[in-house]
Amino acid sequence: MSLSQVQQNAVEYVNGPCIVSAGAGSGKTRVITHKFAHLVQTHGVNPHQILCITFTNKAAEELKNRLQELTGIQNPFWVRTIHSACLQMIKPFIVELGYQDNFTITSMSKQKSIIKEIMKVNKIPNKEGMVNKLLMMISRCKDYPNPIKHLEEEYAQALPLAKLVFGRYQDILMENNFLDFDDILHHAYWLIRHSPDFKQRCIDEFRYILVDEYQDVNNIQYLLIKQFGNNITVVGDDYQAIYAFRGSDPKYFIDFTENYTEAQTFKLEQNYRSANNIVALSQSIIDNNHKQIKKKCYSNIENKVKPKMVHFKNEFQETKAIVTSCKKYLDDGFDLNEIAILYRTKMSSRVIEQEFNRNSIPYKIVNDISFFERREIKDVMAYVLFLYNYNDRISFKRMVQNPRKGIGDKTIQNIFDTPGKTLLEKIDISLKTNHSKAYKNLQTIMNMFEKAHSLPFKELIEYFITEIKYYDHLRNFSDDYELDERTMNVKELIHMSQQYESLTDFLDDCALINVDDHADDTQQITLMTIHAAKGLEFKVVFVIGLEEGTLPFYKAISEAEHSSGTDPISEERRLFYVACTRASRVLNISRCINRGWQKDMKISRFVTEIDSDLYNNLSILKS
Image 1: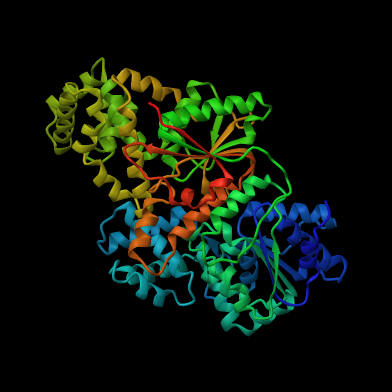
Image 2: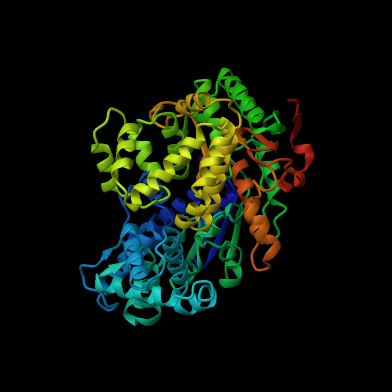
């Protein structure tokens, strides 16, 4: 396939900065690879003098493979992720930074161990949620040239010991000759600002800079790339900037022509992947964002089937309709792996998983674990499973230690080693012969189970959660982002239990869901979050959960109402845009009036913004 005229113009523009604003499915990676080839084959540039960077290992490998096909060059050295490239740059200068030559990049587990030790020494409550918060704080601060200044401005009031923790953390890294992942970029920027030799080496080494997915850069990445010179081409799509929670900010892409005043702009607006009516609907969504590089995306692929917007009473009705539709699409000749169900929050997969299993439809959950494999669900289910089967040692051990009740591994093993035919007998004997605090706590637990036996099943799970103060436990080991997600998953489990009259029926259905049921090499329908779907394409896509509070997510709505400095609703709208543009032939969008424990949910504002002529509006609200 030859380049379009605008793609060709972007490829041939080589003297000075340029930005390629590329819509979904418009061939942006082709521009990067063909420009690399053009510089080498037409202008005689040494491949080792082209710095070509992206942000994931997968994307870097794809670039290398395409370049090899195009030019025959195998494994060009400076085609890398930005972290990999900067690591190569700083290695010759590592002693100048205060490290020894045999430094190592520390793992996340080691980072957590360091933070826990700092907390222990300084008598900071040792809660796993705090460990994650402190690591996130350290990472965000290293996105700025002066981390301490940023820390004092953004974190000192909320985390009084933040400065102490940050300083001691860095000291321990140095003492152990460790760098963490964020240090790689931070040190590269420090060197280019303070080491003339390092800066000159970069200037001599890199004649041209090519950056893919530039809409995903954060502050330190922007500042660093800016130092590499003006012969730079950045490619990206601010319509698909969805990683603010990682520190990314699309303003660096949007404001490129202000930061590089001589820059030329090229817009790739033709979508070569999706049908014209899907592209038109997606454009109608994203037109409602204001601060962006405006494009008018279009497609010449004709499709008479309009996207559908379907209104359901609840998620069970929605899921049954999805199953029926999937069977029809399979009859029509689509393959299982050409169909995807996309959602904003992970808990949305639970009902779909169950219904697919009931109907023997193979599926896979991408970049995630099954609903019943999530930590908080396994914690709560341990109580339910032990109530059902008092010989379940695995559930017993998990149950008595989540939340922790002063019953350690040694006590548990002593119980298991106690004479008795059943685990319940062993527990009874242990309680009669031991009177330490651990066994008193165990007695309290067993009293709770005795009462649980007399409860109707529909009250059971909520009873356990209340008795063990599980929501308090969640706060102890979850950061803010995890806490919301874990809490919603627990509430979804409670809601699910309300559909059953007995514990046996409930457990029978739960047992149907097994993440190992389907091998990876078989054809399967894909279930995934919208974040995980970025960069992928499917012929048939279902986008579910178009309710206020789901998409846009309730936290974004709250943040928009209480903060003037951010624009979270625009990011949520971009998420919806990304979801719709994953579809090439068939797009189905749906919302429910009642989803999980949430009732009378309003339709998402994003749906009401769309030109109603661009989709078929269907209402299936009967019980």
